[in-house]
Length: 106
Image 1 (cartoon, one colour):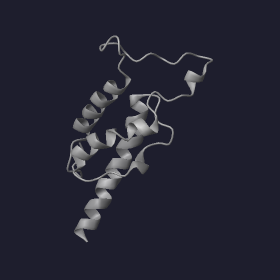
Image 2: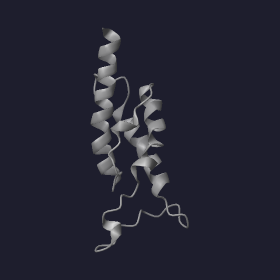
Image 3: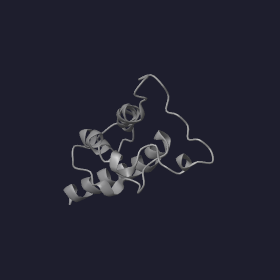
């Protein structure tokens, strides 16, 4: 967690991991890992969770930052892995929090 933030990025990442796992869970086996995309098929380019699906993750994020987060922070098309999503979203969330704090201080 950065000392400049009012929330724990580790806690946020853990909650987002729970959200991600819920999105990609196998219906028949709730403990199964997500299936890897099959090489040479359309599944290679299709995200595991599309950008519209990620919009529901904003509720998880907002619980940590205590303000409404715009959907524009989500990568168009979605994400192929949790790590990709986290690497993309965390810096944007951090930036939004710092911008908001700057506005409130002015």
